[in-house]
Image 1 (cartoon, rainbow, N blue to C red):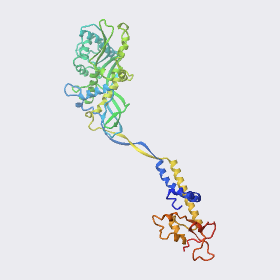
Image 2 (cartoon, rainbow, N blue to C red):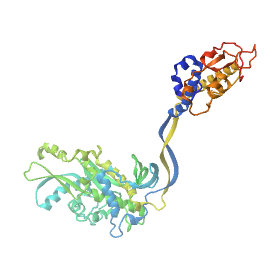
Image 3 (spheres, rainbow, N blue to C red):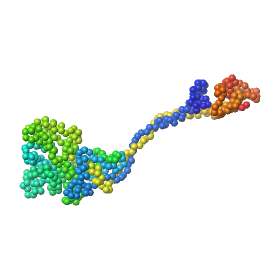
Image 4 (cartoon, rainbow, N blue to C red):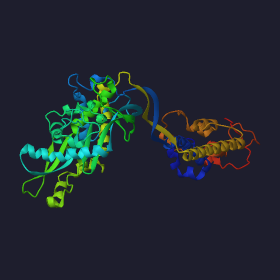
Length: 513
């Protein structure tokens, strides 16, 4: 009974369990109260979460004022770095990533101005001019190869440089108002589409109003487009991930007005000049022609790609090379054949968009792609608000379980305290729970003889001593020296010399012999 609070095996004693029910209850409470300390960790849940850290810092922005980074000083040649970015962007239909300039897992939004193209439907004389050029392509090709082929242009992009002109007073400047019937379109096709150097047509842009703002004109299927350079306001969000940061879609833009094509020898405005160089890079990529042709008595058509890289770009998905030409030009099942020549993966790049919106998107992506090369960054940068998302662990307690566990523990402890107070009130005395102390206090002659040559504090006792059964109660025999009329005395003793203690019986406490 005395070591039940420290020895769990005390509960294996059947006599103890049967005869000391209150002691069992108190001992059980003493064992279970510490378990409440285990409840708190078990009710704790670690919840992965994030927190935003916001700060201002300098980030890169494009510099369109530095002319040297966009062109070579001789011949107004577009810088190779610009041409590489145009090639990467057009072939993959994605914006090249830039090296990270902020902490990982951070994002920021900036606004800046840059070039883009706007392709409007061509009307009036411009539409007629595009069709006249397209209709001159078969005549030029048949003359060049000395054959009589049936040719149908599917795709045509060219710079609107009107040289040379027939039957006009000036070989370079068209009459005003223009007379489209007097121009030599075959010569224009020869020089500006199939010429060795198309730059001679591109470089004549500044001399030819009102087409000064159109880098190129486009015809494909039913589309007739005049694409102009626009000063564009961009609002772009960048997100860093490891060593690179990418542009988040969708970015927003706003056309702020048309920009005329300018070169250094014509104007000292470097920003508009760089816009023109960007447009020239796109014109060099897209200009040229794609045709269907049939030779002689053949009933099937072949595809011919001339002087253009459009088939190497994502714009290929918008080219309808299976377009029906005419019922008397050949069997229409040839259209299904040509349709199968473009893989579905390539067609998916167009996302069901026509060439006009795709060209506009490509021009914006090229501008954003300039961020991938630090040579196009402004030296001073711009200040942006960066929001970094950090991973944190949040600690969450299950309040119900925690309150329940501690309520039970506090209630049990309070019950034990009240039980102890009641025991103190009934017994009028307080003792520790040391068995040796209790045994020494209630000693008698029998115990003295029994423990002769033995110590109560010995680590190991004799086996015979350990086998001795003691009973606590009223001694049958008064100890030596007791007077008649003295109240009986309680003590530990052998079973044969102890009688049961009765409730309300007067006894002598702590009397030693």
